[in-house]
Length: 206
Ligand code: GSF
Image (cartoon, rainbow, N blue to C red):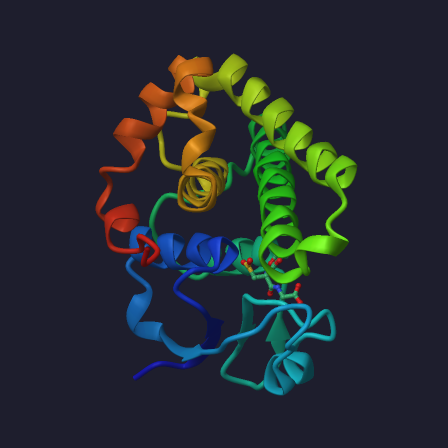
């Protein structure tokens, strides 16, 4: 019997992070999915009531309290299972993991903003310099992950979940980016990571 409700969309990369963690930690039965459609220009009233930022994911707990955003939800759910924690407890690996999580989320923020600017905004109002500024953030983040690819934790931790979901979203929305040619070590890491059952089960619909 599910005790929590997740505001959900199958194409949201931030929601996907939560779904991957639920798979990895065998907590899927605890969560009921409430599918919503939303964008900054067509908000969802229920999501606005759950999260004043009007964004998903948001998680309603059994006592009615609400958690957002995705990083908070990941940390909460990581404390609700008895397996190996996906966020290191000791200080140096912990801060390293959280910093990589933040960079993967920054990459995703830029990719989502580009999606809104190019898909939602009327073509005659598009701002090319702003779009290329966001694209540069994606490129710098990919270059950083290429540098650290060989030291990415062998265990599939919160940083790995965030990075894999970010790369999956780049492939979905910018298939022409061809990042694998420029970042070969990252490509090798992602090729292996994306075969995990948790990632295969949460692939966004095309
Ligand atoms: C970002 C969530 C987000 O942008 C988090 O949860 O980590 N920092 C937040 N969610 C998008 C959907 S998506 O593209 O994953 C969202 O809810 N957008 C609606 C809006 O009004 O921006």
